[in-house]
Length: 271
Image 1 (cartoon, rainbow, N blue to C red):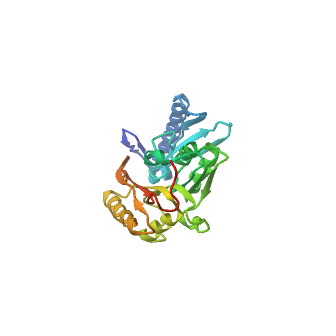
Image 2: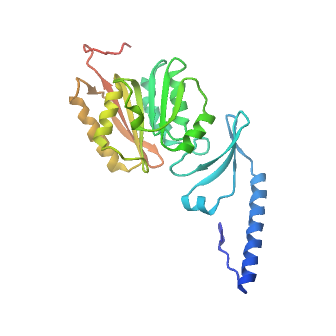
Image 3: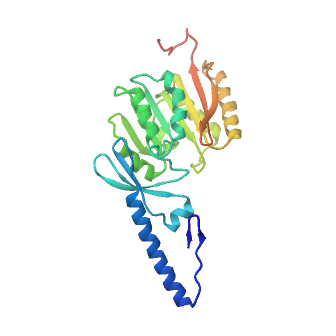
C-alpha cells in the first residue's frame, strides 16, 4: 500500500500481525479519505456538482480519477476522468479550442458534425453556434462519455450517439456545413487516413469548413495538412486562404480547412 507523498507502507512482525495491520491501516485510510472528501467543497458548473471519490487500485492503474456527479435534475452518476476521457467542467477540453476555428463560418440553421466528440462539451458548443434552427450530430465510441453527455447536455437539436465513421454511411453527400474530427490515440483505426479524409470531403457542403484536431504529435498534424492540401484539385473546390494549423492546447494540434467554390460556380454561399 502507498500513500501519496509518503511512499509505500511497510509492516513488520509475523504474517498474521502484518495482515491485521494492513487491514487496520486500510480501514483508517479509507475513513480519512471519506472525511476529507466530505469536507472538500464540490466543483459546481451550471448546476452540475462534482465531488471526488476514492480511487481504486484498478482506476489508479488505468490513470482514471473518479468523481461523483449530481446533475441539474438531481440525478447522480459516477464518472472517471482520464487522459482519454476529458470532462470540460473539470479541465479544459482541447476540442473546444479546435472548434472555435469554425466560429467565423457557423450560422444559425447550419448542420454540424462532431466525430470523436468526447463527453459532449464540444457538441453543446456547436449547438449554441447553430441555434435551434440548426442541428448537431455528435459521435463518440466511448459509451461512458456518451452516457454522461446525454444527461449533462440536453438540447432538442443535438443528437449524441455511440459510433464513428461507420455510422455515417447513410448520410447524403454535402450533409454538413461544418465538421470537427478528433483524431486521437485509442480510436479504432479501421480505415486508412486517406479514406477517412475522403469520407469527410464527401460529407462537407460546397462551402463547408473542416477542423481536424489531433493529439498524435506534430508529425501527424503535418501529414494531415499535406493530405488536406491535395483537395485543391478535386471537384472544382479550393482551400480558402484561411487554411492553417495551430496548437489547441494539452498536446493537441488543430488543422482548419475552409472550402470555397469560385464565385461563379454552383453552390456559392451568399453573404
